[in-house]
Image (cartoon, rainbow over all chains, first blue to last red; front, side, top):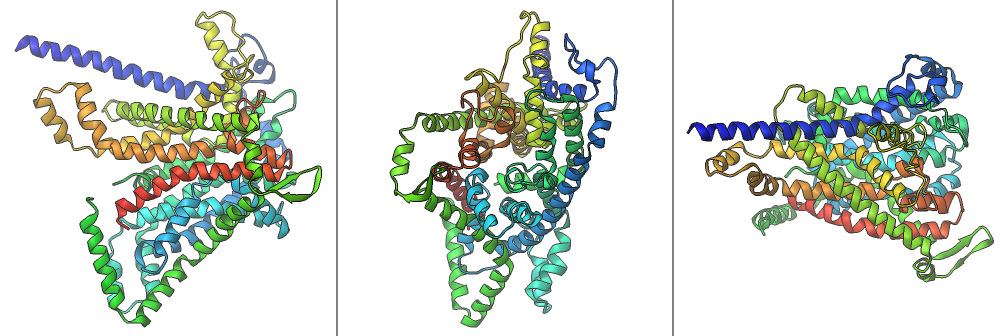
Length: 284
Length: 314
């Protein structure tokens, strides 16, 4: 008996070490590049380009953040991104909320086909449909306009919105709506007064996810917004990348400024968002 | 097979619905279209028509030297399959998708297993591990470009400090090596999603299964192989499908890190389409490549949609 327990204890110690070292290895892989991002952002001009490379700044400085914020275009890009992401989020959530409700709760001919079409379009390579979208927008004189970019952003935000909201809706019991319908409410009233309030956390998570995707969108912004003052942040920060020399300090500092808002949003919504993603993607 | 009785239910419900008066069915259909109409019309305008237009464009010979696009049907595709660059890009695309999706699966599952155990500061470890997934792709690409830099990158200086000699490897400058480097960066950027899916699946495996296995004397590896893996197999399958689709379509990390170079060795379908269309203005060739990638991605997307429809018994 004693020896057996002894063996088990030793085995679990070895296992603990194994699990612990796996965790440390994963954390190193994750954090090492991030260390360089943070360290470069807080290094001064001379230290950035000095040898041997030091992992941590010898003298911490905020000069890169100051320079990024003083760079006039940066503020403009920031506001562009904020406006584009907010408007897209509101538009996409309204359209996909109605759609998700229709696809989960209502019966109509072609429901399955149209739902398949919408889920399918979420998986299309954006680079592959950007040529026709570019040409359509050009024909409508919407190149280099916020409206044009909004329309382009709906191509990916609406399908993802429908997909996520549908998974949230499926966990809302049907009985409450049915009760409202029995009491004489119309479908739309039942939707607005019963479903929407119950779905609020899901709507919040979906909105945040759409904001998060739009905030970092790169390709459409790169192709459609040809005028410098109309660019959004992900394309805009490339200003710090030079043909021959890149101002890494400024670039990393402004990258941190780009990441912060979405990181904050993510901290607040992660529980809801992850539940929705898991439910939408894989739940049996 | 299992879905059969439920399918019977659904068809019975449909029969009942058919017996309802025509007027009510019409009203139901109109309500349905009123709700889903905006989304359907938008997707029609923004996805279905563009895809059709891309297919149409792919039948024309266009280039800057030809003022009028020349219709030449499927000949363009024949030509495409004879150009070495196109073949290389297809090969790169497949290699990239398989490697990135596979390692996101392997690393995602390993990380989920680690995080599924209880230990102090687990919440902190989980939050740190998810950071790359939250970082915008452009930023991730720039961070890795700096990390791989021959002079200032932390990777070279860490290897130097570990005693591998005074290294100045240009990780993104050599064909072959550059591909491996961008693959590693993409794994880093995206495996958090797989990890979240597997962690959720692991937490859903009933504890009683493990307890009875332990009584039967099953070891850690046996429990993993005979309980954990089968229980989460379907989640693994759908997650692999989704991550493969997303990886195939992923544009910005390669665009930012290498722009497809050196000597086009890291071009994948999206970056190559972009180059053909917006650098060379050869919309015909770009569209042919786009059609090709539609077809490749559709193979995976159709699988995914079938799984979704089956599980919801639609």
